[in-house]
Structures are given as C-alpha cells and as structure tokens.
Length: 591
Image (tube, rainbow, N blue to C red; front, top):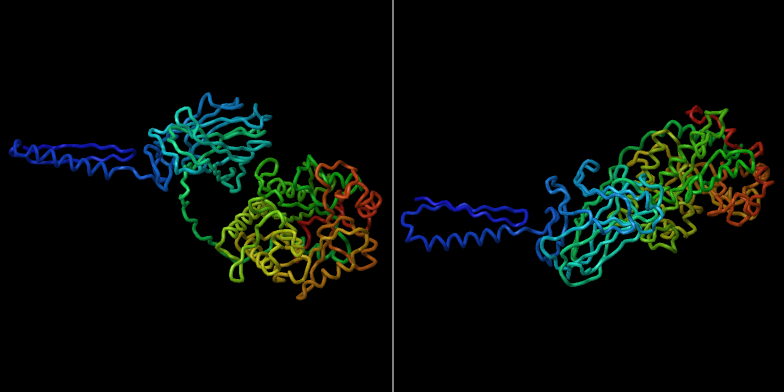
C-alpha cells in the first residue's frame, strides 16, 4: 500500500509543501517510525521557510525583529496593492480635502504608493495634515529602530506656494511610543515633472512593541492639488547600511561646434568693444517680475530698456513656487531673448529685437544651503593635489551642475546664447568656491568647463571669467571674456581697473566687461580715458524696496548710487547701446 502525505506550510510570503511518499507493507510495524519521520521533516521545512527581512519582501512586518535590516515595504508587485497601507480616516488634522490611496506604476515606471490630495481649501493653514495608517500583523520591537525613511515625490506645478512637512508616530495600542517630524521637504532630484526628496524622520529611542503607525504629509500654506508618491519606506536600525552607490562615471565627448547665435553674439560683442558700451541691468532672482520688475524701473526712469539683462541661479536648489529649481529664471531669460518682459513685448514696432542674456550663479550648497564661506563648511573637495572625484562633495557638485545644465539646455534648444559667469569673485574668499584657494578654484573651473561643454554638450555658453586676480586664471582656452565687479564711490571710468583686467590673460586679447557695478561709470569719462567696457551690469535693488526709495543697497532706484540725472544721461548717451539699438542678433554675421 502506498501512502502520500502532503504537508503545506505557510510563512509570510513563502509557501512550502512537503510531499512524502511511502510504500507500506506492514502498517503496524511502521506506524511509530512513520510518525517520527513526518515530525522531523515538518520541523526542517518550517525552519527553512522562515521569511528573511529584506527590502524585496512586500510589507514585511510580522515578527519581532532586532536585526540590522529593519522593516521595509516594496510596491513592485501589483498583486500586493498598497501593501497594507490605508488612509487613516478620522485622524486628519485641519485638512478638509480628499485623500485617495492607491498603488501606481504609470508615472515613474515602477510601483509606488500614490496619495491624491487637495489642499485648496486649507491653503491658509500652517499645518494641514492627511494621514496614512499601517497595522502590523505581529508587534514589532522598537528598541533597535532609530529612524523612518522614505522617498517623496511631488509636482511643484501643482501648487502656487507653500511646502510639505511630514510626521511619523509609532503606537502600541492607543499609546504613542515615539514620534518624529521633519522640516520643510524640498526635492533636489528631478524625476520628469516631479521632484524627489529623501525624507529621514529620526525618532527618540524607546522600548516597547509597535502594533501600528501613522505617517502624515502635512501642508504648510500650500494649495497643492494632485498626487504625491511614496517609495522605499523603511524603519531602520542604527546599524543599517544603505546600498553602496556605484562609482560616478562621466563620459567625456568631443566638444560640440558653437551654436550659430553664440557665434553671432561673440562677433557683435567683438565689433562693439572699444567703440560702444552695452547697457545691462541685473534681475531680482529672489522674486518674480510681478513682485519687483527692475526692467520696468529702468524704463520708468530713462525711457529706455537695457540691452542686457542679468539672471542668477541663486534659487536652483529651491524647488518650491515660484522658483521651481531655477525654472523661473530660465523662463524669464527665454522671454527676454524674445524681446519681452513680464509677458509684454517691449518694442512692438521692432519684433526682431533679441535681448542679450547673462547668467551668474550664487551657488548654494551644504547643510546650510548657503554660498558665503563663513556660513557653510562646504569646500572644493581635494585629494592628492587634484579634485577628489570619489568624495560625496564632488558628487554634490556634479548633481548641481546637472541641474544647471538642464536649465541652460532649455535656452540651447532655442539657440539662445548665454553670457555664462560662474564662480565669480573667487579671489575675495567670501564665497565657498574661493575659500579653498586658487589651485582648487582653477581645477573646479576647468572641470565645470569640460563637464558642461564635453559631457553635457552645451554649445551656447560664452564663458565670462570673473575671479578678479591673475593668479586665479584657469586655462585661457576656457575663458572668452574677462569681467570685473566694481562698487565704486564715483562715476569715474575705472581706467585703472580696466587696464588690470586687460592684462590678466597673457596669451591673447580678451573682451573686458564690467560684470557688476553699483555706480555706472560716466560714458564720457570712459571714452576720454579709453576704458570702454564691453558692458555694464547695474546690480538690483534691495529686497522689498519700493520704486524711488533712496537706500545704499538700492543700486538703481533712488538717489544714493545713481541719481536720476545720471541715469538719464547714461541711457541716452550716443555711445551706450540700449535694447532699441540692438541689431537682429539672429541675423548678425557668422564669420
């Protein structure tokens, strides 16, 4: 007689089946032996089918665990759905909109937890909080768990302002064991139209067993309406080690040919240098045109528009409205090239006018997100006499360059040439890129040039070097124009500074520009002294200033730096080029 025993053992997501086939001739003789065999095999199978705590397992939460792995959720399996997560109905705080939870793999090409929210009616609240709940099937020992982490994705275009925060609470029944909250969540990595933020909520160390948890995403003065996404949710122990980041691989390609309009603008600048001075005005990168319109102030005072407008990637790391990670400045630059400002065509009778675009970069980095060397410890990474390309700081530099390149490419796609002035005023030491000294600075400049030109293939940049001292000059082949930043106490031509800048590049003549100024040099003095700067760039007015306000930090408006009479004289001088005097820069000579 043949007996077949089937033993089905289920342990979390593992199902094991033992099929034991035994041929029996004498049941009485073998019964005791058979019981021993079955018991032994069952014990072995139970042991071998115990689940491992890994990030690959959907909704791993069943057992008490003190391992180094912690607990994680994975939404890659469509059949797992939301992996046990649910909207915490009745737990919301000051949130009146809907909250719909689902699993979604249509936006990012992989499964994530999706929460559709609408903060429209709660936009004036500084803490409006929908919540998610997770109930563990078996209590979780909290003793070794120190933080909860997750990746958060949001679309900044779904809101006109405000930001998100987050909070996690671990419960044993109705008793809160521990909690943690975040500051403002700001995404730094672009994922299509979305921004990704890696959120870490460090909890107070506690004992006890967690049987449920709440995770909230709180709106702060935001009208965000649309989906947000969660991925890589994990409870971590102090010993948890994230996956090793693969080495940074940079592929260097041959430099692309200069774009046609870059060639045209360089030819125009060369033709005008020594003859005329191009007028320029710096924009306010920390506000929109609607809040403070520097171009409108210039026109109101002089009846003329500047030919050149300066922009700044100051808010490149700020992904909230209205900055959107530098998009605002890039969009305004595109508008300026199209002969518009604040949505209005400036010279309606001359549609072929293209305003000249310049960009600088007050590069915020480090935990303090600052550019002043006394406010951040971030420095140019250095090892064995060269850039430390294996360091995390170098990877930060590359990530930021990727962001800047993405914005600059939107201009390249329209063949808009850019007077590109990064790493400015380095020799002063007040910015982090200058605080490391000239050798590191030159290495960073040359790397940036190679990275944006050969790796990112940007062919619309005219490189304006503005480190201020000859000892800081990088490879001259990476410098198109030499700039000086001068905040003088007079309207003199600054002939001495002009000559110093002219002598900084020994291997050949360069165009010399006044890349920042307070008081505008008198054009008549410039002509008389032979200090014909290629352009001047008057700095912007102070934050929240009003039109006509006299203040030492208002470099245009008021009477402190540039008087009304002086402004009118400069902008109406025959040797000063204003917007209306520019030729069609898309039709200027190429050779």
